[in-house]
Length: 286
View 1 (cartoon, rainbow, N blue to C red):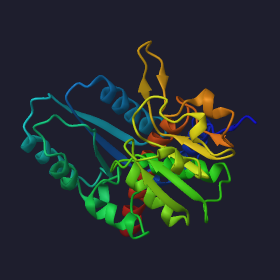
View 2 (cartoon, rainbow, N blue to C red):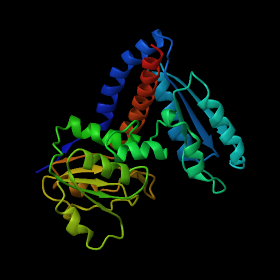
View 3 (cartoon, rainbow, N blue to C red):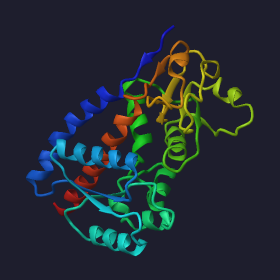
């Protein structure tokens, strides 16, 4: 058995085409969706992510801009900029690219973003709303994964789901979304005792542990849906996920590749969140 491949790149493109009409409708009413991305420092990976986010916005007619600071900038300067953007009626989404330099209080910076402009879904108010099953903004990567389940006609009700990884960005919100969808959820990490015991009974397996090729074929239940959130660079420069793709391809029922799986969906759902923020504001103005 060879798994069905869930093509995140194709799904992302399909969704983005649908976004264009929503952006045009908002722009016609004077509510052109606007996203500002703040980048502190010159981390090469972060620079690529930020460029892709800005370009993704511009490609569907949204307004987007990048605000960059040197790595030595003091936190107060960035907080002042966030306050300015919070007050700007033309900006619907504010995103601070993580990680921040060590002298920053990451939590304080994220909490400074107005909850109704927190299109990353990291503000405590938005995390609480997600936990209660009534989300305002869903963190972009788990949101993208849920869209992939939808596209693949994956019924989550009553299924055993295992998430490897407990980060605030992916693992925890992913678990909450699966719980809200009716799955029975186990959250593991790289130190979980007898990890294979848990993964082998998972109908849905989400790997977000940050270790290359960590999940091998013998850890996967035959026919399971395997979602690989990881992106790692090997010594030869090639990209790979947290799942040993070739090994798991022969066992899983559905699987996401790296690259071309979850990655394109993350930025797509950031666009979705920003458009939703603009639509909410437009509805209030009408």
